[in-house]
Image 1 (tube, rainbow, N blue to C red):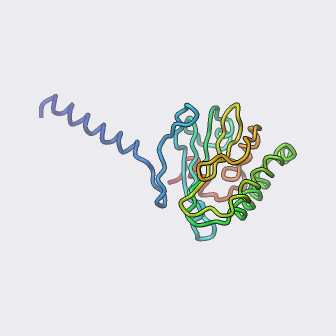
Image 2: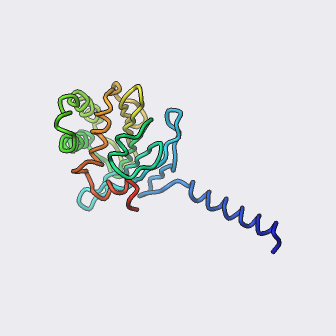
Image 3: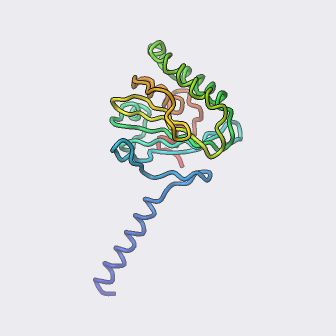
Length: 195
């Protein structure tokens, strides 16, 4: 094999492996991009997994950040835009989903911050109550946009006004990453520690 042939073969192998690395991730039939362009920033998939309730698959959650991190504290402190993407795997009464988020929010939010977080919590509860139902395959995102705040999109449409305090976004992330997360395995997956 000549040097040129080896170089071409090696380059082809590298290109194939890079294509595999850049391929979308698929979890329970939900395709997730390895990176997304959001607010003029390239965000990387930090981790993703399935939220189970008992034995039932409820949704796929995916966390996108400017760079990969491994701890909840690094997620909260990460600069720039951030996104938590949720895709439902079953039809859910969104009022019940909102109630479960509120409960997990309250269990994980720092008590000293709760009075500051209540207006955003009420708004978040209303957003989900207004939806009635979110069907399997549909979803929502919780975005942090510096200078704007937390923006919730349901089925691709912004719901309500942005919630300006970064503490609110971090409290929302604690639903999945806090000391009493919605699902321990999912917490590890979002932090890139499990597959």
